[in-house]
Length: 137
Figure 1 (spheres, rainbow, N blue to C red):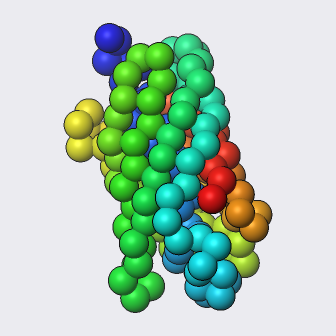
Figure 2 (figure 1 turned 90 degrees about the vertical axis):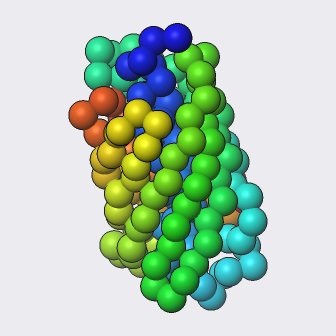
C-alpha cells in the first residue's frame, strides 16, 4: 500500500469529518439538530499530490460541547482505510471552516463544509492532496 495514497485517504476522512462538524457547529444546525445527529455517510474523490485520484467511501460521527464540535470518522479507498478527526466553526449561514488532523500519518489541513438540508458538501486541502465529498444523513 502506497504511503501517499494512505495520506490521501486521510484527507478524505478529514473532509467527511469536517462536513459533520460544520453542521453541528452553527446555530442554524442547532435548530435542525434532529436532522443532523447520528451517522453521516457518503463518498467522493480524493486527489493525491502526484495527481492520482481514487474514489472514497466515508462515515462520520460528531459531538458538540458548547460552540465546539469534534468529529471522528473513517474513510476507505482502494489504497486503504484511514481514521481522522476535525474541529470546525461556522463561516456563514450554512457553511463551516476549520482544520482536520490524521495522527496516523501526521497530516493536517483545512476543511470547508456547506450544508444543504440532509446533505453536506465537503472540501479538504493539505500539502498531501485534496478531497471533495458529499455526505448524507
